[in-house]
Image 1 (cartoon, helix red, strand yellow):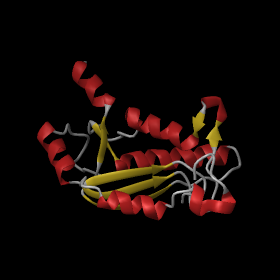
Image 2 (image 1 turned 180 degrees about the vertical axis):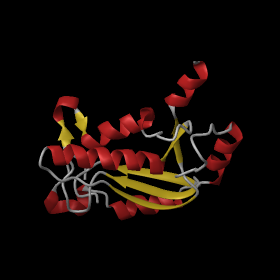
Image 3 (image 1 turned 120 degrees about the vertical axis):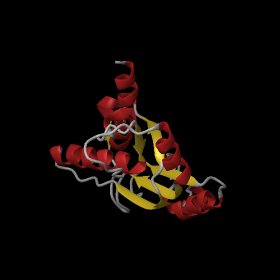
Image 4 (image 1 turned 180 degrees about the horizontal axis):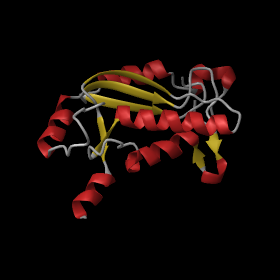
Length: 161
């Protein structure tokens, strides 16, 4: 529901997540990601030690991914918090941090949906518990492969060094 939505007339002032999912499923893109940062919204590449991924391998991961991922800021029927001093929501703060390379713990050189979810879920739950609150992000993930969200600055910095 948008800021100007009205609880008494939801059918006229809100868009149901099921409708958004229908629209996304009909879209021609192979891999789709939906981020829901709202109240009531309800890859281990694995080798021994961090090994640099070849550009060809990264391209294959990207090309083979298909399906849909929905990362929501909280469970259905629960509250999602704003972080007023940061002028954004808690989920948005940690998602931006994840995409800026904090989620690339394996130094792969890219951030996947799974990487971002792990970083965001852990950070949001910790933030909430430190304030005696509860906020648990959720991930609905129905994909083949893993969806790459962005390249990691960590890898770019290592290459320049």
